[in-house]
Length: 451
Image (tube, rainbow, N blue to C red; front, side, top):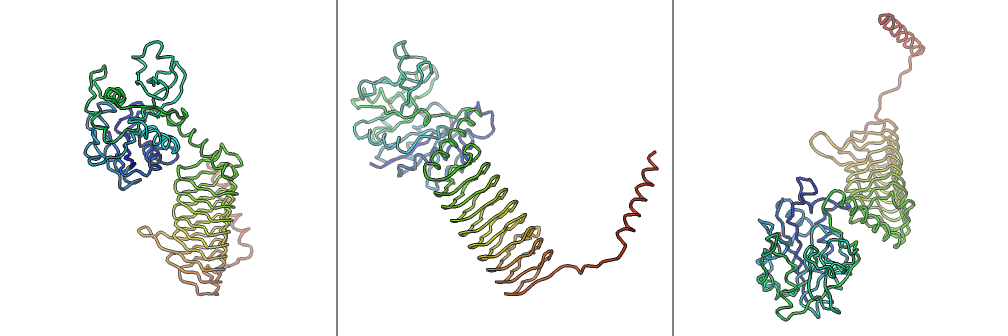
């Protein structure tokens, strides 16, 4: 059966104390909304609909940046979860599959949990996702009889015996699509909040002769984020799980707690990540790589056998071929560095191509920006760039060419050539002593004037 994904993301999130919509606050480098969309994407949905309200344009942009095929609909007034799903009627017109309802501020639902919900839908019209919590928690209770869900009772409305039930409602549902809007049309807002509750469709479905059930997941999957404190807790939970998964996959984290990962970080087996390494979005590290301490990577690809750091920064557009070495206090950006090349110390390589087995000396800078536009530097295979060379782009240093230390290279260097571009050294005997004597006398005179 085909799946449609509906993600509720219209809330303002007052407790976040923010001008930004709650679902756009980030966990591991991605908005919470994107985490929810990624979870649902594992079901290969035929349609994805995001319900937005506060900050509609920003939420719509985040949703379509992740999935250009997503439909974003406006909930002008927030009148409950049932009402939020009602506004998807037009977006789901003609769809006869199953509808999964997720929440943009509940980012950690796992793929296998959603798959179990889909399996349960084969025998029931409505499937609710639940979790077990302490009886003192004020969540809605799922009242079960065998595998049948009898009702969802809000804590405030629950009788004493119902409050002892520890099976609680997460809000996540899977509903038979051909019934969805008939069920929604039958609920009302006759309650203390004056809102349409999605949970009311369970009773409506049962009254109409349709069955409902609930399945359980780990409570960590249903973590909702409603405040900055919750956001920090969610970040910590994501990092702990992602680190554990990497280690299970054969990656060595020397000090796991100090390594920071993004939602899309990919690291191959037998790679070693030293302490205090930060991975921003869009980083792929292949097998057998060592990322040394205090390095920062974002938008970069590191191939097999590479060594990066310590204290290196790889910025977006960095592509390292196999066995490349990037050393301490080196920064790269929009740079393609070929097999076996070395950039060992205190250098900046940006908007550049570096040939295989080239050696970039300490303090080398590719001067890529003229104040208006960026320009490209090309360094050939087996080239040797002397320390403290300034490569003023656009410029090319040929294969097996060399630059002298301290040179400012403004013209192309042909293959095999040595380029020297620095002023001639001049020595003046005795001048250093005379200069120091002049400076000391000047300082003494200045100090006398202060007395």
